[in-house]
Image (cartoon, rainbow, N blue to C red; front, side, top):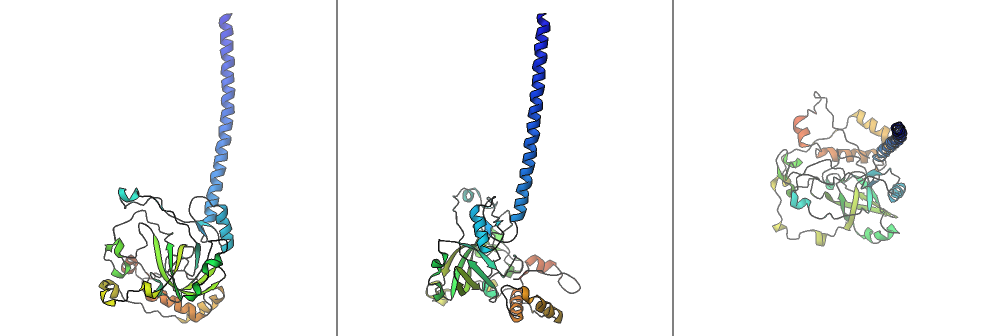
Length: 318
């Protein structure tokens, strides 16, 4: 009788465990379902915020990012900055990280890297604007800047896709040759900071109007400084030297011609341009971009752009 009672007790205990296991399995499936929903929502959010527009650093859009995006009239998107890039060495990688906060995000006529001039003076007709986000009254930060004709713009190469930094790089003007990374202006740098000298076209409230830019749309701007020739130019020109591959590069300028069809297509698109108001302005901007041959060394050497090759170089402007 005692054994039968013990067996009955163990049977009840087993049934209780089975019931509890079913409950736990049900909860587990519910958690997995919630996890799947969360992942889908996260992926959908990531897809929505990756369009060109206002940039932010990190994996989530903060309320201040959404507010700034509303001010600039753009869609927020993440600034792609690799947390660790191979090639710097252990000593460099162990150095402290210094944080910088953008003062605004550029609204540029260049929508992507393809076709963007490598220097601003290559395309003096290019246009951009910067709406300041710093300060409770950003317009006060610009008081007096209209007294200057040009400004230095410091910015972040936020659209770099490289996973590794190389000590030797291929400057486009060398047409295949190599130079040390700090002897060039490559965007792929240990600290990807850009420096551009731009012409100041005017100020509208808290917005700076610029020309002669070499910066793509959505770029985080770190600082604006006035250009002062007395301080920024070396007056003793006898001590200035530049290598021959800069002063006399081994690549040729391109002759740019517009066909009748191209002219007609431009005329049909005039109403859609934001920065350029006349066909002459947009023609000049396109000529400026193509005249200095914006193609990479690899494209220049290995891709057939002749009529028989049927290859096209595509870039976006305005």
